[in-house]
Image (cartoon, rainbow, N blue to C red; front, side, top):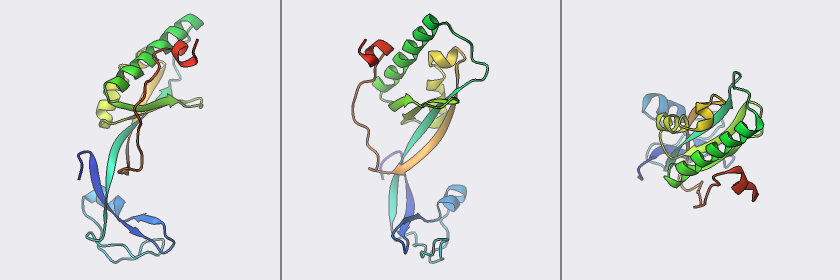
Length: 167
Protein backbone atom coordinates (compact mmCIF):
# COMPACT_ATOMS: atom_id res chain seq x y z
CA UNK A 1 0.00 0.00 0.00
CA UNK A 2 1.30 3.47 -0.92
CA UNK A 3 1.80 6.18 1.73
CA UNK A 4 -1.30 8.38 1.95
CA UNK A 5 -3.62 5.51 1.01
CA UNK A 6 -6.04 3.51 3.13
CA UNK A 7 -7.49 0.06 2.48
CA UNK A 8 -11.28 -0.12 2.37
CA UNK A 9 -13.21 -3.31 1.61
CA UNK A 10 -15.50 -3.16 -1.41
CA UNK A 11 -17.88 -5.57 -3.08
CA UNK A 12 -20.22 -5.72 -6.08
CA UNK A 13 -23.93 -5.43 -5.35
CA UNK A 14 -26.64 -7.23 -7.30
CA UNK A 15 -27.15 -4.10 -9.39
CA UNK A 16 -23.47 -4.06 -10.31
CA UNK A 17 -22.81 -0.96 -8.21
CA UNK A 18 -19.73 -0.90 -6.07
CA UNK A 19 -20.64 -0.94 -2.39
CA UNK A 20 -18.23 0.50 0.17
CA UNK A 21 -18.62 -2.22 2.75
CA UNK A 22 -18.59 -1.14 6.34
CA UNK A 23 -16.91 2.21 5.59
CA UNK A 24 -18.77 4.06 8.31
CA UNK A 25 -18.08 1.37 10.90
CA UNK A 26 -14.46 1.07 9.81
CA UNK A 27 -13.87 4.82 10.06
CA UNK A 28 -15.62 5.08 13.42
CA UNK A 29 -14.19 1.99 15.13
CA UNK A 30 -11.24 0.84 13.05
CA UNK A 31 -12.92 -2.57 12.73
CA UNK A 32 -14.78 -3.97 9.73
CA UNK A 33 -18.33 -5.24 10.15
CA UNK A 34 -18.86 -8.98 10.21
CA UNK A 35 -18.84 -10.48 6.74
CA UNK A 36 -21.74 -12.11 4.97
CA UNK A 37 -24.44 -9.74 6.27
CA UNK A 38 -26.82 -8.27 3.71
CA UNK A 39 -26.31 -4.57 2.99
CA UNK A 40 -29.16 -2.08 2.50
CA UNK A 41 -29.05 -2.48 -1.29
CA UNK A 42 -29.39 -6.27 -1.00
CA UNK A 43 -25.78 -7.23 -1.78
CA UNK A 44 -23.93 -9.62 0.47
CA UNK A 45 -21.27 -7.78 2.39
CA UNK A 46 -17.85 -9.18 1.43
CA UNK A 47 -15.41 -10.51 3.97
CA UNK A 48 -12.22 -8.60 4.82
CA UNK A 49 -10.21 -10.97 2.64
CA UNK A 50 -12.35 -10.63 -0.51
CA UNK A 51 -11.05 -7.34 -1.86
CA UNK A 52 -9.38 -4.15 -0.80
CA UNK A 53 -9.01 -0.86 -2.62
CA UNK A 54 -6.35 1.68 -1.83
CA UNK A 55 -7.65 5.20 -1.34
CA UNK A 56 -5.67 8.37 -1.99
CA UNK A 57 -6.17 11.08 0.60
CA UNK A 58 -6.48 14.76 -0.27
CA UNK A 59 -7.85 17.86 1.40
CA UNK A 60 -10.51 20.03 -0.20
CA UNK A 61 -10.16 23.63 0.96
CA UNK A 62 -13.06 26.01 0.43
CA UNK A 63 -12.73 29.79 0.40
CA UNK A 64 -15.87 31.13 2.06
CA UNK A 65 -16.85 34.79 1.68
CA UNK A 66 -16.99 36.39 5.11
CA UNK A 67 -20.14 38.37 5.89
CA UNK A 68 -17.96 41.05 7.49
CA UNK A 69 -15.51 41.21 4.56
CA UNK A 70 -14.11 44.69 4.00
CA UNK A 71 -15.30 46.72 1.03
CA UNK A 72 -12.36 47.33 -1.32
CA UNK A 73 -11.98 49.87 -4.08
CA UNK A 74 -11.26 48.53 -7.55
CA UNK A 75 -7.52 49.10 -7.35
CA UNK A 76 -7.13 47.38 -3.95
CA UNK A 77 -9.36 44.47 -5.05
CA UNK A 78 -7.20 43.98 -8.17
CA UNK A 79 -4.00 44.10 -6.12
CA UNK A 80 -5.38 41.57 -3.65
CA UNK A 81 -6.59 39.24 -6.42
CA UNK A 82 -3.10 39.26 -7.97
CA UNK A 83 -1.56 38.51 -4.55
CA UNK A 84 -4.09 35.69 -4.07
CA UNK A 85 -3.24 34.15 -7.46
CA UNK A 86 0.48 34.45 -6.75
CA UNK A 87 0.01 32.67 -3.41
CA UNK A 88 -1.84 29.81 -5.15
CA UNK A 89 0.93 29.56 -7.76
CA UNK A 90 3.53 29.38 -4.98
CA UNK A 91 1.64 26.52 -3.30
CA UNK A 92 1.38 24.73 -6.64
CA UNK A 93 5.08 25.23 -7.38
CA UNK A 94 5.87 23.81 -3.92
CA UNK A 95 3.92 20.66 -4.84
CA UNK A 96 1.17 20.92 -2.21
CA UNK A 97 -1.61 22.46 -4.32
CA UNK A 98 -2.87 20.11 -7.03
CA UNK A 99 -5.76 22.15 -8.42
CA UNK A 100 -7.60 25.39 -7.63
CA UNK A 101 -10.26 27.54 -9.15
CA UNK A 102 -13.18 29.85 -8.50
CA UNK A 103 -16.67 28.73 -7.54
CA UNK A 104 -19.57 30.73 -8.88
CA UNK A 105 -21.52 30.96 -5.65
CA UNK A 106 -22.14 33.93 -3.36
CA UNK A 107 -20.77 32.22 -0.24
CA UNK A 108 -18.35 29.61 -1.55
CA UNK A 109 -15.85 31.52 -3.70
CA UNK A 110 -13.03 29.05 -4.38
CA UNK A 111 -12.00 25.42 -4.15
CA UNK A 112 -8.52 23.96 -3.82
CA UNK A 113 -7.32 20.36 -3.72
CA UNK A 114 -4.17 19.87 -1.67
CA UNK A 115 -2.11 16.76 -0.94
CA UNK A 116 -1.58 17.59 2.74
CA UNK A 117 -3.55 16.91 5.90
CA UNK A 118 -6.46 19.29 6.65
CA UNK A 119 -4.63 21.04 9.50
CA UNK A 120 -1.67 21.80 7.23
CA UNK A 121 -4.00 22.91 4.44
CA UNK A 122 -5.60 25.45 6.79
CA UNK A 123 -2.16 26.75 7.82
CA UNK A 124 -1.13 27.21 4.18
CA UNK A 125 -4.44 28.72 3.08
CA UNK A 126 -4.48 31.16 6.02
CA UNK A 127 -1.31 32.70 4.54
CA UNK A 128 -3.31 33.73 1.45
CA UNK A 129 -3.35 37.55 1.28
CA UNK A 130 -7.10 37.54 0.57
CA UNK A 131 -7.71 35.48 3.72
CA UNK A 132 -5.38 37.67 5.76
CA UNK A 133 -7.25 40.76 4.49
CA UNK A 134 -10.49 39.33 5.92
CA UNK A 135 -12.26 38.57 2.63
CA UNK A 136 -12.49 34.82 3.19
CA UNK A 137 -12.49 32.13 5.82
CA UNK A 138 -11.24 28.61 5.16
CA UNK A 139 -13.02 25.27 5.50
CA UNK A 140 -10.81 22.18 5.06
CA UNK A 141 -12.45 18.83 4.37
CA UNK A 142 -10.63 15.48 4.12
CA UNK A 143 -11.36 13.66 0.85
CA UNK A 144 -10.64 10.05 -0.08
CA UNK A 145 -10.88 8.70 -3.61
CA UNK A 146 -9.95 5.24 -4.93
CA UNK A 147 -6.29 5.28 -5.98
CA UNK A 148 -5.79 5.99 -9.65
CA UNK A 149 -9.30 7.35 -10.17
CA UNK A 150 -8.14 10.97 -10.13
CA UNK A 151 -4.93 12.23 -11.70
CA UNK A 152 -3.49 15.73 -11.65
CA UNK A 153 -1.44 16.78 -14.65
CA UNK A 154 1.58 19.03 -14.33
CA UNK A 155 0.74 22.58 -15.22
CA UNK A 156 1.31 26.16 -14.31
CA UNK A 157 -1.01 28.45 -12.39
CA UNK A 158 -1.19 32.13 -13.37
CA UNK A 159 0.30 34.60 -10.91
CA UNK A 160 -1.97 37.52 -11.86
CA UNK A 161 -5.27 38.38 -13.49
CA UNK A 162 -3.36 39.84 -16.46
CA UNK A 163 -1.51 36.55 -16.94
CA UNK A 164 -4.77 34.56 -16.62
CA UNK A 165 -6.62 36.69 -19.15
CA UNK A 166 -3.74 37.35 -21.51
CA UNK A 167 -3.98 41.05 -20.83
